[in-house]
Length: 226
Image (cartoon, rainbow, N blue to C red; front, top):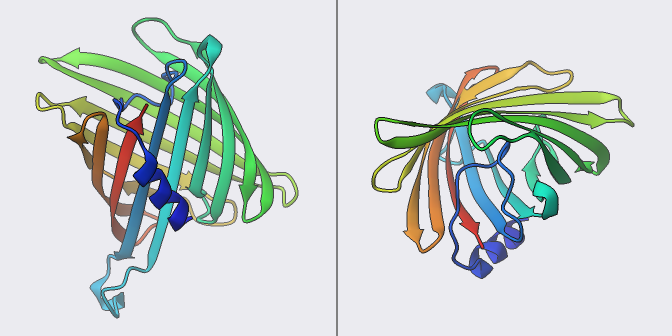
């Protein structure tokens, strides 16, 4: 997985990377690729026996715009339960006016811990302009359904983002989940996304558990479209 992420970062070509995923369809014939590294430590200093993180993982996410406003994608990384995942998905906009609320449905198929899963999802998005700034609000919900074990995990991410005059994006996100058989969790995950070259952005953020998660962490990633 680490080698795959490294190769993607090396081979990416330069192109613009918008922040509007989820409810917004990918433009036909274009790619969006992101990869990141996430490290976490205990919030309670008495539980930290060294500077080594208690968890670390890497993600790779890709989207490609198809005809009829369809978006195909690949999601590699960590599931709601924390296990490794490999999921391919197809997203269909069901309500996409030029302005106002947008709604999209997606269906993913793949594996979590080498077990088959089906992942239906619902995305809501709303773009706005206020005080000379462009921004967006979004809600992205998924259910990871494992038919063999009959377990279902749920996740909901709520995001507020705004584009600054410099081109930097400020993103505030609440990540929530309800893994089957485990306590539900919620964490706060703000980040800054800055241009580091033509059509390439650097995503730097932190994560802090609010409920059902006693860790804090950092995230470093790259966004790219072409």
